[in-house]
Length: 432
Image (cartoon, rainbow, N blue to C red):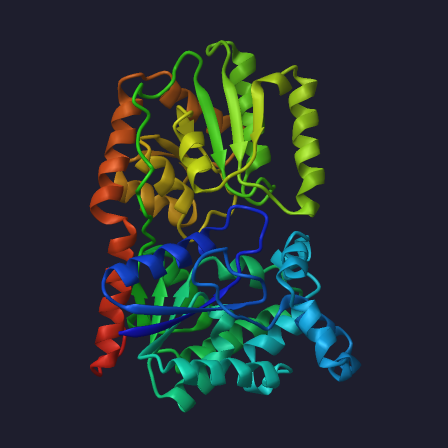
């Protein structure tokens, strides 16, 4: 099967679960014998031998929406604004990863042919016609505005993954927020497979988009486990190390974890206890990181905290093998939590709040501990329980690793999407 995968580019300067999922999925589908051709939107793709074209370049997209007369700008100027260096720079600013102030542009994109990017949509569809795919896979439902025209002009099934789109939409002001959810529900009629990354998120998005439960497939995230393995010496306990792997920002709970670390370190039960954080962030996150550093310094603990860069694949594996436990206590939870799979693959137990997709993943893997409420005190207590048990902590890590290898590899993810595509290709509408 020839599959065209349409993804947002990976120019963001922080750990991006969706970007990692898209890359792993494409590679695993190729391993299963499929031909996968990738087209990127907004920002450049990750460097590699299969460099994809960039459609809807973020700088041009914003300027054309903000200044209607910009459409008359000479073509050479628009080409220059689509240069990969400039697009990567644009990705480093918070506006590239937040819907605040971009409500009008978001709605325009969701409306597809009826929005303000008809020229760019036509260019994308012409490119797809040249590829002649058997199916088109959209990375997320914020791209669903293109589905109607793709199905009409190519006559092939369209699949769409669902993962954390609500964080973008719910950052919008009303009435744009309500309009976005309504349009997403309408766009879903032009998508053959709606593939949520967890049962929790399938139910959540089904309710938000007013989609019948039977239309939702569940295709859990899987990771390429190569290089992710347990440290030969086991988990470190002298001293123990608490880790954080995600975008280092308030939304992902980095401040909450720092507060819990302070409580544990001041309690004196774990002499030399360390905190390690990695995952990057936007320029707007820098003020938050400075505030976290000031908090640690005020308690005399800044020297026991490491803010680690870089965070590429090999870097993350080495980082995880340095930890005793990982926690990313995002207050609102996540649709899934790829960082949890990576930690488990390295035999590291995880401690997460009982919110969102965290509950489902930890209950299904047995690779960690859930706690509630999501406060620094409750988190500190849960972390203490893991750090103080040198027998159970490694057992949790091993259970998580076993579950990842048996259920949550990239090959499992690709097989799940493949099954859904085969169903619709043979006339069966995608279900769970």
